[in-house]
Image 1 (tube, helix red, strand yellow):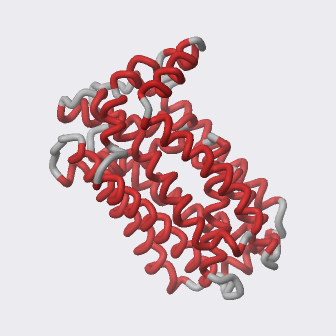
Image 2: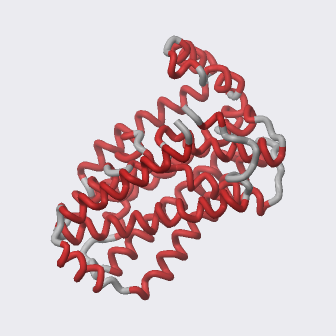
Length: 318
């Protein structure tokens, strides 16, 4: 399926999902709640969101340098943010646009850059798990989700640390038609992946990942304040938000679509927020923390040449 078709499907699903959320609520109440939104918080929220992007950029740039890949800062930033646009494609294949752009613009082999994309996902998980521990005692359900997510993260770490275990997993993947196509590039990328989870880069990348999720939790907190919700503490926000994100990641849906929104709205109602207000808050949170980034990603994709290069991104097709 072509990328454009996948994007169209996701857009239709998003519109339908948010329409269901609105229909499930009292539209008049939602209008009143949005009217009460304090617009003076918008600059603070946008500053936090964009600050998070620069934290991710610093992590990306450090991972590139660790792999002995040196490109201009401007191009590096545009390539990173181009990836935001295609996070809406199911299966995380959209993240590979960064690898494709590095090959198209600078002739860098995908065997050197695909591991960086994998490491980004790994450290993103490390960051959210680490931050979750700060607020875990404020949200009981989060303990179980965190336990499951941590177990998966530990398994992934040992998988990446042991060539023997890694090869066993590859042999299992090779037996299935759908996953067999990933075996060869993954096998040739093992050493590059392993070098990204050893030494000082581990501390830097993990620290930056924690900082990113902390900044994003702060933006969520300010969205709540903009709606006049002051009864939920910041540590509780950390726990409820990270739990929702982890559930979204475990769903393997693009951006955790539907899972993040539904779970976060449910968690907010548990803390005494009216259902209509909770759904409104969640949609606004997602607009700022995800859809704003997706929109910027398409601009970056255009500026980086990702929409016009002859590289037709055939590797991103199913």
